[in-house]
Amino acid sequence: MLEIRRILCAVNLLKPPLAALRYAVWLTGVFKTAQLDLVNASLAASARQGAFSSNARRLEQITLRHDGREKLDRLLEGVAESVVARSTSHVLAGQPISAILAYAELSNVDLIVLGVGEKWAFTRLVPVGLAEQIVHGTSSPVLTVREGAAAPVSIRTILVPVDFSSCTDVAFEWAATLAEGFGARLELLHVSADRRSGRVQLAELKRRACLRGVAADALMRAGGSTSAHILTLAASGAYDLVVMGLHSDGGRIRISASGVGCAVRLRSAIPVLSVRASDSELTLRAEDLLHKPSFECSMSAVQSQEVVRPSCSPH
Image 1: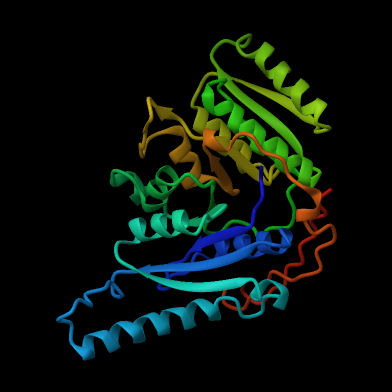
Image 2: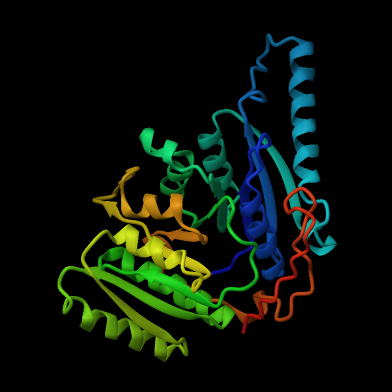
């Protein structure tokens, strides 16, 4: 069952992910019972606080955590009180990836929101970026938002790449569930060198969407790079969200900085929701959403002066 009750937004205090913060705040307002956890994992706050730690060292750690929480709280300046009241700030100690993954598991987080930088090329030089390790290391769905992405307004059209593997079903179920809640439509993208390949499967997915009252269209692309086709469509302005299923290989998660999913998450002009098979059976209760959001998702530290008023009217 899709119930977004707890949203985690991982924040680098030195350079906060402004676009990701906007989406995390917006979703916290849309899902009227959701709690937002702003989390910063700091190596400086790592606990060397054993029995032989000095009082000065302990005081330093306490001060660092306090200062970090204050900085996180300031990121919510200008946010509607109804959202601030459901928000918490946490400074975690230790290696960032391990700390964030542990927090997400122990806190039963329903959605993780991560920012990815505008300059993605460097990420290709490392085995796996931080965002990719979190995406593949957690059982929670992860929304990645590229820095510079437009402020959230509504979810009207969802792009769903499908290859009819095991991850197609989970991507379709999540996308269809969100489409039901937001009154959105789906576009199912299949890339194949054979123009006839996948037509039957696409027709079946469209039928399943229709049975749920969701409008769906099929897009066929003949050959070429799958990630390039997805990225071109994502940049067209016709879509608000990409939903992709995560592949696994015999129970061992595949993490590759050159894979289709990684390329899309790092470069997509619109947010990408990555989900895995264990979360495939979902429903969305209409009462979990605000039908007429009246909150403002602008914030002085997250958005430069302009005020954005969400017009999303989920059904």
